[in-house]
Amino acid sequence: MLTTTHALNTDINKAANEVLLNVKRLIVAGRFHDAFKALNLFIEPGPWQLSKHGLVVQTIERLLPQICFLCETASPEFGKIQAKSKEEIYDLVSSEAQRTMNFLQMPVRFQSKPAGQKWSKAYLSDIAEATIVEFFGEFSIDAEFILKDRLSKIFSNTSTATSQGICKNADEVSEPDASWILKTVFGQIAQIRIAEQAKKMSNTDIANAILPFISSHAKGLNYQTSFLLQALILLCIEEENFHTAIQATNILAQSDTEIDYLISIATINKVKNFFASGVCANRLGIDDISTAEYFNALSQRKSTTAQVISINSKVKFDSLPSLKKILSGTVLESKEIVSLNVPGTSENVYALETSIEEMEHHWKTARSLVSKTGRWPVITTTWRQQSSNLKETLLEQDFFSRAPYENSPNTDDVSPAAILDRAKSVDVEAFVQQLIIDSETQHATYSSLEETLKDELENTLHRCGSIPTPAEMEEMHINGLPVVSHFQLDRWLLDWEQRNGGSGNPEDARFPWYEPESVYLMFMPTPDSWDALAYMEWFDISLKGAEKYVALGKQWQEQFGAEIFAHFGTIIECIVERPPNNVEDAWPLALQHDLAGTSTLAPAGIELRQYAAGLVNHDQWFLHRRP
Image 1 (cartoon, helix red, strand yellow):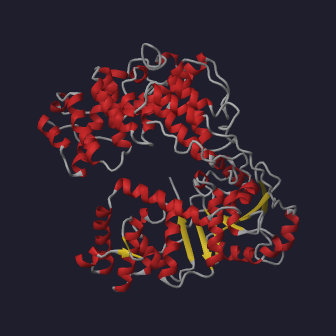
Image 2 (cartoon, rainbow, N blue to C red):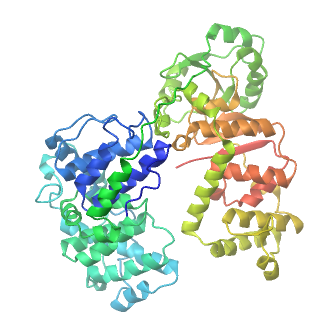
């Protein structure tokens, strides 16, 4: 259904994200022109107008050509994309449709045996009624190979975005895209091998196994299950088995994230016609009346006065010679120092090369001089090819690019000064609470509390040698209330472990510092440690707003004396003057570390309660975020 929960929300980001989700629903419902009408709200001046940067803007930039293609109309100018004629839209979108089909047909794993060796009608019937996820997992890998093979036989030699098929003919494409190359390479290495008995199973047979299981048992869709649904939609539409295609479409359409898999195939001609027929609209609860009511609700939004931000710039007007003068007489005196400009500003960062053996000594020297230099020292590394010229090597890294910050929620200014100004008004407690809600929601999607309890008890037994009794678990309470979330369960187990011998060796939950091959010392144009996150993005923090992580870091510095020592892009390392000296104080900090450094604990197999115990009296922090 079309929702208007946030239509009048003063946070344009929340309101816009809801509209974009409804735009996708309108596409699946076959109401292409209504989808364009909704998207056009952001293009025309008015209460829905957005700032220059942000994920919402980027999403519109991706959606606009697709919707214009579906509506068979030219595309207006928006954001970074120029206005395009109907013919240019056709060329652009048809090429994207062909790439989508290439990827859908391309094997993404190598086979150890022919797919479907166990398959029979009875086997598929058992899959539909299976209660063990692992049982479905083995079947789904075979199904992936089989459906890719069937897609390649039907779609590999056709063109697609035209009334005849998907895209331009192969001889019209001047340069093969990456998906075509990969598909060719995989094809030359090994053709998909299908067991004879699996070849006898119809697409309907396969769908009758997949759809009931996903509907009944999957905690959340993932890449593999979403691919299976995409493939079934395409194959069933081809066979005119529209009932099954509608079922598969409905599963994806009910997920706010997986609906994107439907949008990615909407420009394939037969899918476009399938959606345009309106056969999916009823399942989505979309009709003429609900659509009219929806646009009436959107029209009630009022224009808001743009917020004027007064930026107290921290631009430093010092010079490289003045810095060298301050470093005179120190171990850094003889070092070659180069100047690197922060793009779009008059600020410069000064940098020198150090070594793994000397970096801590060099950092502490620079740290002791902050009151004179006005510059916070940060250790970093390079990831691209190095040259013999220090400045060329560092410029090649593009350390201070503003591009990642353009992923920030609705904003016009992504300069360091603007980010730091916004950080002053961040409600850190509200930010952390929202991270907790988001994380708990994700946890609940993939694992129930009962399933998590089973795993956590095994971890406690492994580390501590015993576990709570059934009677104790029946009385699980936090602050007098029943345990109802994953984090509350972890906290309850922490308290139990502390009462029963501790949470294991604290050293097992502490991380060694990263030691890259090359290291450099940066003198940032600010005396404040956590301001560094406004100059060098810590992986993907801009998605929620870099200013929020700056403010959170400043709170850590105020409470624990935590200062940034190193910034390696995905890794932040801190030296901590006043680490927590008890588990009670360490727990909320550990939770914040887990929420901010999302790749710190889980990949290492460390439980949150174990990590909290390890933070006690530990003066070095290692926080990790990665793709």
